[in-house]
Length: 233
Image 1 (cartoon, helix red, strand yellow):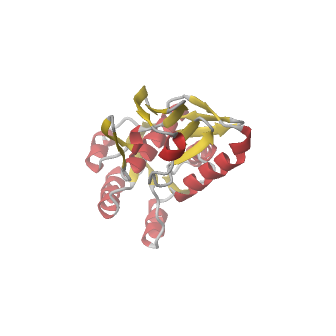
Image 2 (cartoon, one colour):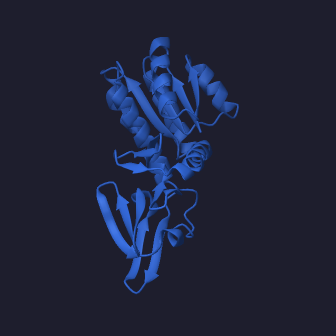
């Protein structure tokens, strides 16, 4: 996935690029220091899923241009970067995903990226539906962070905790048409890759800070699966 940055200050651009690469090392980060070069590359076929746009110069022109880009590509996520001036009120006409105040705060940058990626995932909304003796259950996949096998039950967890317990084996759950979202990282756990924040040695950390174990036998498979997921997003 391509992430683009329009920033006139080289120091800020490098700061932002470093944060993005540290969070998502397998994504391509493109940087422009002039709006004309950004427009030229996009006109030439460059496609970005997320754009960080500085409003340091020609804020109205950049905002109007971002609106045209969103009309052409509704899935594009725009993150504006601006000083606290009159342009702050104009940016909301372009439906931005996030507005960052300068000087940039690293935690706010991370939050903006997480929000943009969540919104991109939501645009691919699918539901998990099961019909059994307990009834009919439908849960959007984006709400499911991970599932846990508990004897003969499957516990389904979301951001705030347990969503539902159903009579289903984890192996049968993984047979459903989930797209490429779920990966079994342990005999008792399958994780939704869209909610993974990072992978550490034998541990997955989710975006809600829940930590899941990775079994030693599944570590390389889990790591490779997550890399492939990021590259295809």
